[in-house]
Image 1 (cartoon, rainbow, N blue to C red):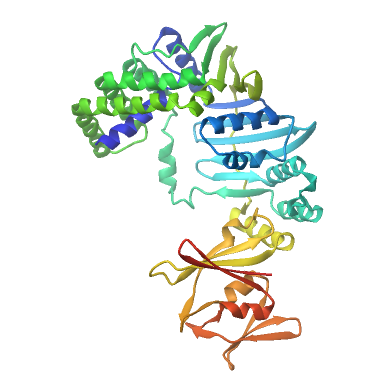
Image 2 (cartoon, rainbow, N blue to C red):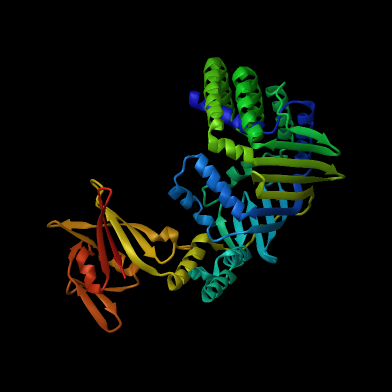
Length: 512
């Protein structure tokens, strides 16, 4: 029961972030509910600006790492991802979003501007009944942006002009890539239909308001203020951390109030979702039982509060919280709603990161229709894996074995660079054989990974490596119809064999 209570408390805290029950806070929540209720089918458009000072970011990461007690070596590892960048960078994202809350479908189109150049990021679809689709233009746009941001002297295969041409050709074969299908996840048409309540979410928005009023009466965040036509939210890192402390304190001292309001709200949710009476009765019974454990709730919140207060005092955490600030303004302009947000990280007098958004939401019309034709993610990755083999081929295979009672080894394909498209296929398991104290590894799996042509002569019961007109016979052992050869026999093919022990296990790397 205590674990369930802790989970419940975390959920309530997430729901209540930036909210309280002062007149101003309730006004802000009511405006948000009205917006959602009136704009269940809507269009949103706007701009996101990201300004980063990479040099200031490096100093910031160093200062935080030192406050956390990191060694110089650990700090250098933390900075590894930033080493290729310097100076001030600006990224601008222009977006258009269409949303239909009646069937939970969304459409996103965006462009990204970096270094004075605009990149078409294509469009994406999400529909509860259909799945998630991303356009080939999106993948191409991300590739182009990544290529232009990269160091030209890296020599990466991703920067190879021919690789880019083959990537574009592969993307051109199908306009959309299906990232996920709801039916593939096992959801039936009936289950998908039940996800969205009949008649929309209007009644639930009213239930949310009732929940706040009943659950958090007298609780305030002091973060919301009124402005002309709407409301403003202001907070820094320390204020948000203190809000969580105060919220834990409030819940611990008012468990009956919070649990009763949560029960009422969740019953409304379950009704909207057509939950069975049995499920609803079981939930209510569990919540009623929780009300009998107020002492446990108080002990849990006090413990979490103490842990949080101690964490806030940690030098690295304190410095991080001091560096962060957030401000948002939401105003009503006729039938539309405008929002502006600013999130910033500073380090002393230096601006490290500033993220600014400016958007408008208004009523929309028309159905959002998902693509009718697409290629699966697996098929696209398979095509790109073939292309990658040309520009970033396997240079070796590392075999790790020796777990007690396990007759399988872990195989990892080694490449000049980390695989971008074939990472999932670069790891496998295969059986190995120990005979007369010698280890025999699977011939076909390893050699084919290295691009070899393996031929089996059934009459001779011998495996050959075929290189043009040349055939090399490899003696080994046959088990369950598979050929295994000793570790050192790979040297007959001109491969380098590196053997070592790793944490009590045995490892061999066969490389070109």
